[in-house]
Length: 93
Image (cartoon, rainbow, N blue to C red):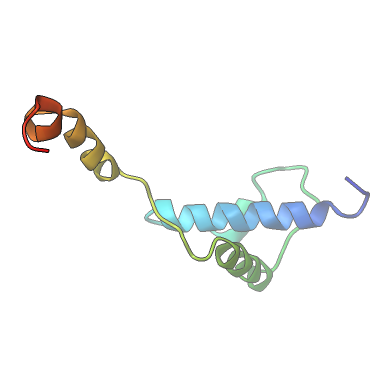
């Protein structure tokens, strides 16, 4: 990493942490708290700057943000249970 360029990675990291916290936590930590996780950090960003980076991250992901829950796997497990899958029992087809 070139000298003086570390602020970009730090800003990206803070923005990703903020997005993750907003998706997962019921009470979102203060942006300053997210930035001070690393005590040796030389960079502190204004909330507006972090929010703009969050928007850039989310637009790069095409706003495809979702939380994975056990319900996301229900169809998979039902397909593996033979009494619910007639093709595995030799019925149908």
